[in-house]
Length: 113
Length: 116
Image (spheres, each protein chain N blue to C red):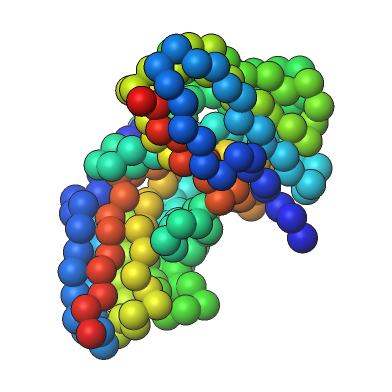
């Protein structure tokens, strides 16, 4: 069975500061990994995904995540956050042939001016 | 582009009442999902469907029923609502196929349900 652990339920940071949201997973098979973002009062949107190949993946709004197989992690980072990044972020794991994803508990990112 | 539409957006029920949540998608997706979101619990899968006329249980199916009579619609029913079912409910859909990574899930905006 697969599982995902997001180690921080809330992360407060100041605007323009760097941030890292942590995600660890467990799986007995090769995985695909995803980060979804949920802005206030909205549904989830895909932020980025790891399929295979390069372990570093990037989103269009400056976030990046690195797949680390040895540490079974897929941490999300941004070098300088903006107020508009305030949201809840969910890490998810799946594998080829799976019918469903397994989501983590979510991390609420709060940006202070 | 409507995508995934959920109705209603908000609802307040009394314990024991019944209701149906509707999810509609216009992307011709085969797979549809119902999740509930609770503080500190993340998203938990209630039921899902891999095609018209099929349904399957997820992680937390008790107290809920679903139906997929039409490909574009996935209904979630609460026969006798309980306070423990107070939550935000999300519907999602995606294409079928082995390549899960290419067939990403698209989510609706959610239904906020309170059971008093």
